[in-house]
Length: 335
Ligand SMILES: Nc1nc2c(ncn2[C@@H]2O[C@H](COP(=O)(O)OP(=O)(O)OP(=O)(O)O)[C@@H](O)[C@H]2O)c(=O)[nH]1
Ligand SMILES: [Mg+2]
Image 1 (cartoon, helix red, strand yellow):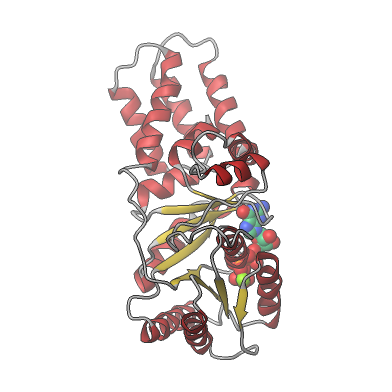
Image 2: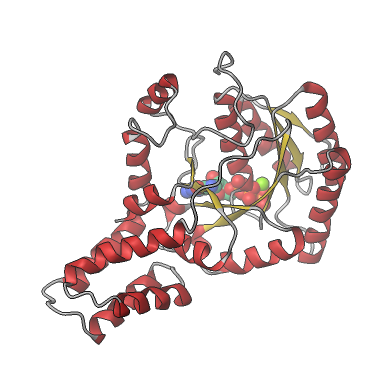
């Protein structure tokens, strides 16, 4: 761990990476996006290979031997976009743009689409990270199996690697195994953990964790929550109760409610987002398992449909397989 480094804003987690290129970037103080990120980008590209294959091979197939843009070509293009799980609405909007752009050369369509997709993914310039008083509290929510606990482990590792003091709260008390799984991640990430027994009140765990974080001077608190209870109504009520318990201790906390969505569940992810957002007010999204799907177009559909910023993408099961979402880099890795 790099404790000698001056502490950065608690929201500004460095990208996790085991690549040597990134270590040197860290040492030079360069942000990870600039210059020496070949390894980081290569891994992203590699992990998106299934989706890239769907899109790139699809484009090649559609454009092969075609000289003009006609209705047939547009129809095939639309089908391809829908196959990659971009969603019907977003696919139709993109096709509409292509047909009204009066592109004359077939081989210009790909770069036109790339630009349009980038516009969807990055609708406005990135906001500078807000300076927050420590501890920053992030509550992680999502249906069961989407990757909440794994994402917490990866985020914690990233934050401790950049010199932050991290505390994880085991507020998924529904199963004993959930607490054990989180303990393993906390150890790997060199983070502290606050836990109670199985079936304990999750709101009490969250409250204790925030209290401990204040007492111990933690920079970041990551709150794991259950993805399944007996009913969806129960789950939403429990999550609301956790949120209230946190704000009793720190009035403007949780500073982030991060919804974890599984990319392989396709359009289902969108309805989950609506459900969680209306109950809790989701402030950011993490989309996991992009390495395991040929339908990574879901990223584009999600950014186009939900007006919630996509903050992280999960591209594997390992501790370094979480990246801050970077629209330009993502589009480059796809095309
Ligand atoms: N390939 C891949 N697998 C992932 C990724 N993120 C999580 N997983 C896997 O998804 C499975 C479920 O992850 P968990 O972190 O346990 O999910 P959870 O949301 O905490 O699940 P519950 O606690 O049951 O609600 C595990 O096998 C993870 O290794 C990812 O980005 N890529
Ligand atoms: Mg879990």
